[in-house]
Each structure stands twice: as C-alpha cells, then as structure tokens.
Length: 172
Image 1 (cartoon, helix red, strand yellow):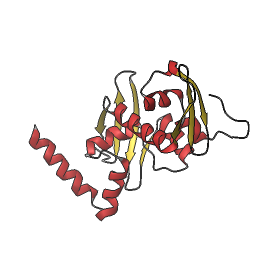
Image 2 (cartoon, rainbow, N blue to C red):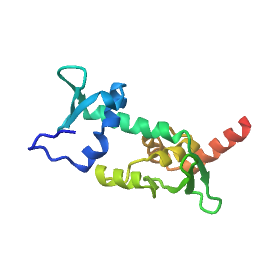
Image 3 (cartoon, rainbow, N blue to C red):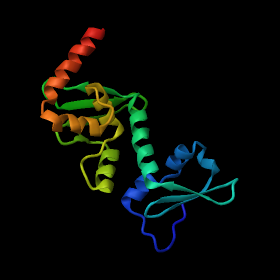
Image 4 (tube, helix red, strand yellow):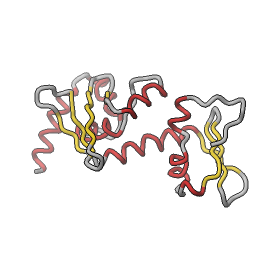
C-alpha cells in the first residue's frame, strides 16, 4: 500500500486498511487492487483495471472489520466453564487453537493476538474478536454494543442469561 510521505500510518490504520478488507468492501479479489492509500478520513483505492480512484470512508472499514469478525465467529465452539461462569473456552476446529474469553459487565476479554492488537489500536478494552463474538452469540447477543447495553439497562445480565438458557432448553 502506498502512503503519502506526510501521513503517519497508525496502529489502527494497519489493522483496518488492509488489501483484504478493501477487497471485501468492494466485493472483488485482492488481485484487482493496485494501491490503498490511507488518510485521516479513510482510504483512496486505485484498481488495476480502472482509471481513477475510489474513496472509502473509515466508517466503512470499521463496519467491515466488525462484520468480518462476526462472520468468522460462526464456525467457532464456545464452552462456558462450570466453576467460573464468566470464563469461556473458544475452540477453532480448523486450526485447533483454543482461547480463553472472559466476560464482564464492562468488556469481553480474549487472550488471542487479535484482541490485543485491537485493544492497542483502538486504545480501549471495549473491542471484540471473533472468539468474543462466539461467546456473545451463545449469550444471545449479536454485537458488543448490545451486550454492554444490557448491563447498563439494569445490571441484571444474569437474569437474562437464565432466561436464554431456559429458551435454549425449551427448543431442544
């Protein structure tokens, strides 16, 4: 990716503005991308078989970033620890990796490198990797925002979890 000399690429830029993310946004293969030039508000993209550039806003990259991790979480297995209800093990069968996810009222923590990279790049612990999304899905939430909002509403997430468990048992 080409960058103007006066633009300093941040850790967040390196996480968001990748050729694969750009390809997913544009619904093309990475082979079709000539350059991705990051800036303060997003990226300018030039394609191999097209003249001119396409501007992609930062918000589109962030939406794609989240959607990609949510989609990749679908193939993961999440198992809650019996003795520690806030701790889960998430297993990825395709590469046999296991990560530990801890859920609290303020955030979802994972010990995987992606969670650590996001935490550093976004400068907050309120980030979510695919392992975290696998746990949130088990808890009945589609997004980290919805999970955190459930805690803020009345602080009674454990009651909600009990209702979800009863619902799941009823469907079997």
